[in-house]
Length: 372
Image 1 (cartoon, rainbow, N blue to C red):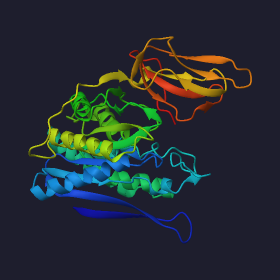
Image 2 (image 1 turned 90 degrees about the vertical axis):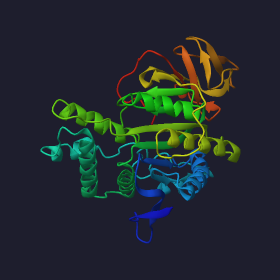
Image 3 (image 1 turned 180 degrees about the horizontal axis):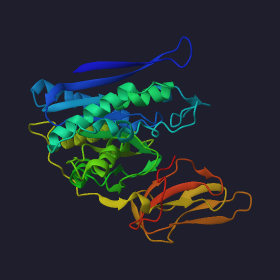
Image 4 (image 1 turned 90 degrees about the horizontal axis):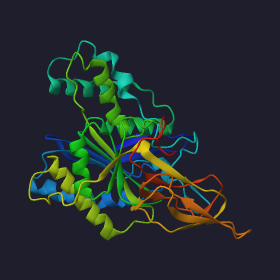
């Protein structure tokens, strides 16, 4: 294992931060992987999972089981780790710009597209290498900007060459689920069968250029631009894994999740040896555009009847909002039929506030599809 650090220029005099990554099997020619956690710095399940994953990777490296390089970034957002208010961690939005830390990543197809003219051939594998080299050139030329922008560039410089990119997050209260592109369906199914995720939300372009799509959308766009002349691979499988809810931070749970990630790395060829086979059924794959929000009909106290992971019917009562002044109980109803996959953390609400999401089968939304 090699520890690498990347310094971030301080936002003010006398301050500085750094990113840390651990690299296993550096330079090995097989399939490669990149995993990070804590990009939303108030989400700790993934951070703990990667602590357990590192133990597995150290053992695999010692046995000579690695076939490709694995880079692990245990905390992807040192800026957000310092963002607290009134004893509560924040870390989802940059306090300077108010931008979500998981949005606004460099658009690699736009940055690198022109420089590929005259460099592509009829060899798909060679084109993949050329494209990744162009991505590296474009990232190296970007001005660092603010501390948060510099951090985004640094993470992309570490991750853009990987064949598999996994960004570990969690929700408030939620079932294990993930977000993925439709470009590599076999990998999507494999990830579900290895991790036990019961739901995969699928979209080519969700809007906002989140970290996972910053690795998949460029290959889509370059295929649209050059695909009629040259073979362009999908290039990278990337997914955002939502490891249940914010309070699901437990060593036994994390150790099991880490072992299942090892099973995925073995299944895609990053590891060779005696590793567990995928043991779970495929996830229900639904369009992200089919997920619908459960909105609060009034302000008050939120109580739930249904829990994340339950299949619900359109119009079904999922819970209530109680107005403590009038004692009136307002029903929360499912906007569509499907899976109730997440709920908000807080048990108080304002009228019109989003309280949960139901994943439905029919696309019903357009534009930016991710909650900010």
